[in-house]
Amino acid sequence: MNDTTPQPQGAVALQPRRAGELLRAALGHYQRRPWTLIALVAVWVFPMGILNWQTHCGRSQGCRITVLDGVVVSTSWSATTAWVVVVLGALAVVGVLLAVTIRVIAVRLAGEDAGPRQALGSGGARSGSPRQVAVLVLGAPAVLTLLFLPGIYLATLEGPAPQLAVTANILLVVVAGLYVGVRLAVSVPAAVVEGRRWPQALSRSWSLVAGHWSHVLATLLLALLATGLVGTLLGLLLVPVGSLLEAVTGWSATDGWLARTLIQAALNALTLPYLLVVWVLLYLDLRARAERLDLDTLRADLAARQA
Image (cartoon, rainbow, N blue to C red; front, side):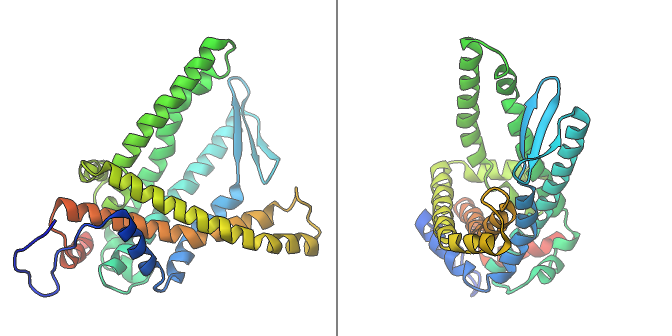
């Protein structure tokens, strides 16, 4: 989009960028005072990492939930329900903290060097975006669970037909989920920046991504590959640290789950903020492709959430 209309100084329209340009721009923004973003992400990454839970469900006896590398939490439906409530509560908290982090990133991208308190004070404190993002975060696993329920039930049956049906269910969910997931990929930034309720945020993302599906997919895949590569390299460098902790504390390879979990959470806290910056930049890029967007408009969107 090339806007040739005379603009007042400081209100130059943002220009669409390719995936590589977005990733380079995100790296530049991430390198400027990254510790605030790292701390915000660490607040929810570490507790979720320590949960480290896995579930195996049966039709009659409920779910056998294990945490902390093998500690059985539940084998009954009543205890399973209580555990699910705990997990849903944790996800809701993650949604609220994610909204705060996204807002800090958006405020900084708008040209204001703000921390969490300043960012929330510029409109986020009285907006409903944390609640809306919490709904979006809770909704994603809930929808996926519902879509996989037929396959989960069929997997308990014997015979080739149920197994073929399970395979078909997985393929259908993966293909449809990829398309729909990309179309709804910027729902969270839309909810935070524009103060939209979650149904409007989903609709906004659907319309913004229209015609740019491959661009969104390529940008997100490249960002995931970049963060995954950096995380893997850092993990290899930290292997001696884990070995040293096991040697000092006497932990074996099986009961040293805490050291491994903390190291992995630290790696996520370092790499996820970059992915979040790419996410917000991609949302702004889509807006620049669909409408005239400049920094003044972005600041007005952020400030308008005070009402």
